[in-house]
Each structure stands twice: as C-alpha cells, then as structure tokens.
Length: 406
Image (cartoon, rainbow, N blue to C red; front, side, top):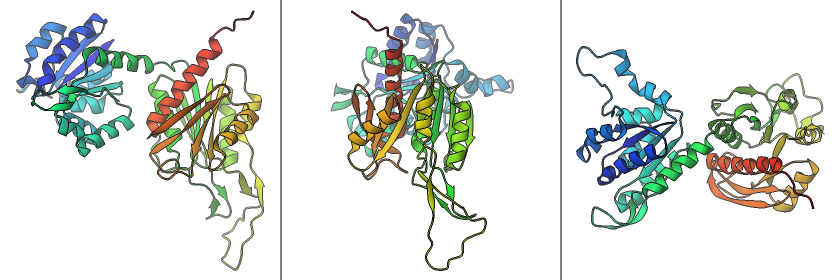
C-alpha cells in the first residue's frame, strides 16, 4: 500500500523521518510531500534517501518552458495512487488550509483531490492548539471524516508546557493502520439506506411533512461508502447534495419510498432505515388548491409501516437497523420497537433535546440491540455514523461466530 506522508513546517518535522522509516518497516511504500516551511527544518534529500521515492516540494515540478501536462497535474496522479494521506506534523496553518479548502500548495491541493483516508497529527504551541479557530478547524475536519491524532502534553520547543507535542510515532502509525483497516471493513456489503422525510400531498401546493433534514442518513451513506460498502441511498425531499454512492434514488411520498425500498431490499445485506416516514397521509388529496375559506378538516389514514414489512420479510443473514425518534420513555419505547419490528438494532434519538437531531449537524443517543445498549455522546452526525457502523461490524461478526453447545 502507498502512503503519502505530508510534512509541514515545525520543529517536529525531523520526527517525520522516523515515521517514514517505521512505515516502511510495516511494508508501506512512502512518498513524502513537503511544504516550503518544512524544508527549512529538514532537507528533501533526507526523505528521498530514506524512501527511495521522489520527494514533492512544489506544485509544478518544472519551472521552464519544457513544463509538461504531467507535471502540472501531478497532484491528481498522486491523489489517485495513494491508499492514505498522513500529515505529520501538521501545523495550525495546514489545518486551516484543509478546513477551508485553500489549495495554496501541493499538499493542500492533494488533500482536496484525494478520496483516500486522511490522518492528521497536529503539532504546535499550546496556545495555538487551544485557540478557538484551531479547535473549530479540527471539528470541521473531523466532521468530514479526517482522523485526528491528538498531540501529547509536555515540554514544548517554545519553552512552554502543555498540549501540542507531536504524538508518539507508534500512536500515529497505529492510528493510520486502524484507519486503513476500517476503510475496507464493509467491503462486500450491499447497504441500503433510507433518509429524510416523506411528504404527503394535501393539494397541489400543500403537504404533510416533518422536520427531518436527512443529514443522519446522508452521513451514514457517506461513511459506509468510505468503508468499502456498495451503497444505495433512497431519499425523501432534502436540501442536501447526495454523497458519492452506487445508486441514489429520490422519492417524495411514503408510498414511493416503500416501492423503492422493496425493489432493492432483497439485494441488500444491510439496511439502515433513518428516514422519518410520515405515519399518516390524507385519504383524499384535493386535485385543486384548497381555498382559504373557514376551518379545514383533513381525513387522515395510516401509511404503510415499511420498517415492519422489511423486518417480517428479510432473509437469514440480512441485517436491519431502525431509528427511533422519541420524546418520552425513551429506552422502553425503543426496545418495544426493536422487538415489534424484528430489528437487529435500533438507534434511539431524544429529539426533545435542543441542538441535536432534526436539522442539526450533531446527534447523540443510544444504539440498542437485544443484548446491550451503547450510549453515544453528542458528536457530529458523520462521527455518529461511524459509531453505528462499528456496531454493525460487531453484529456481523456475531452472526458468523459459531455457537458452542454442551
């Protein structure tokens, strides 16, 4: 496997030589990308001698009239050839470039161009580390799936003591190895995900709906794709840009969502139902806009219970995960839903809590199975998606573990 090792400007840059060597000891091919500031601390020749690979130090490898298209788009070639991007050490400036998409040098451009897993090990002055701008940039990167190897605490080169020391080499490498392992732990899974609300028409301009934004389902689709799964996302109306998945299906009503899911369910090894499906629909939608003329009474009828239908018809080996948005008797209601709808797990969200759940970028809750309940503290929805998929891996392993009988 090929790793791009980004080295940025700071006294910890010299430690990148050890990281490069240790990566080679683990069987990785390493290509180093250095910023201009990094070259003030370590010369490119050091890494070239260690890795036997070209060290990339600038955006354009040739500055004369003989420059070629290959040299001009080298960042694309590297981006497509690597299995992971590791940046160690990463300065505060590098974190800011990554978070805000400033492609000012080869490394920042490579970060934007690659779809491979990214692991970043920051190192800086303690006050720079603690600054709200740095912490906001870190949160942005985490929400996009970047693994942050947090710095250690101790005596710093600036003479201060506190957080900011580059993490130990072993810690950085193990974080990279774990991320690479995770990046393909859903390979072979065909994942079907529902997301967003459904809209039930009252007349040509009005509908019954709910507050679901679809963000949790979209985060799960993105996270599952990153981990090697083939993903189909069936989405109700949202304002979100669909992630890069194998198939994206846009629907509006509960009936349309049911049809789309049933058509694909038998081909899915894992189905995750995050959609906030409308429980009721008008019995007789008006073909014309209803005029505002006094009180309006709607005759509502229940919609199909898609989750229960899938639970009753799934084949052996298919995993089925549901979501429960609750405001009271949280765990009790979620467990009843788990049992009643024949689910392997259910994700419980307390939607009465401010700042999480519907329309928010953050979430919290419990992942409940027949055997256990795992509390998930408040975090970004992409991070929570990762936690949910971690539990899916455990469920799949449990299915494949033979039972021992006396």
